[in-house]
Length: 192
Ligand code: TMP
Figure (cartoon, rainbow, N blue to C red):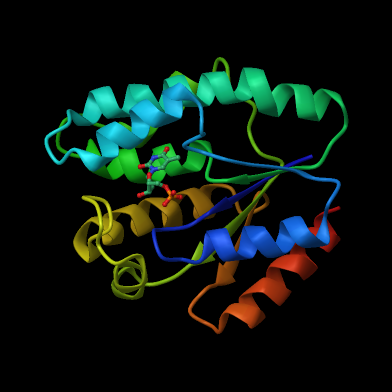
């Protein structure tokens, strides 16, 4: 089973994932961008304020293709539980926003590029936080971590949750971390 964690920067995904990983030592725990050289290329692009948004999308997708091949598919073939910190929905939400002016229907375009080769998640925990809280928690260290950009990303996530209410589980991430973790743990137990 493939369970992904999504949310804007500062939603607290990483803390929640650590707790879920502790509770499920049998799980394969992974993330996008990955630690491979594809992921390093992505990190370089994110850190560069002048990088081309379309080129950046394809770096993320290259990293995803490698991630699928090297980590996700083998783990699922071995019947493992896979927990992923960010996955395809991050592209739909973030690059859907960064390419808003460049492409006509960016989210549809990004979905179309992934569709032929990806493996969609079985369930997605969406940690929902307002953009101001997210930006403040994230500390605005890169171009994505600003409230205005994150507001667009959040509304893209809203569209995704609305379109697939059975796959997404929305969790209010403005609550104290221990409550968010407890809700995420209960949700994962129920899913399994
Ligand atoms: P992180 O904060 O979860 O480490 O993710 C790194 C940044 O990359 C974060 O600002 C979100 C962004 N991102 C995208 O824009 N598109 C993607 O597909 C992924 C996986 C991350």
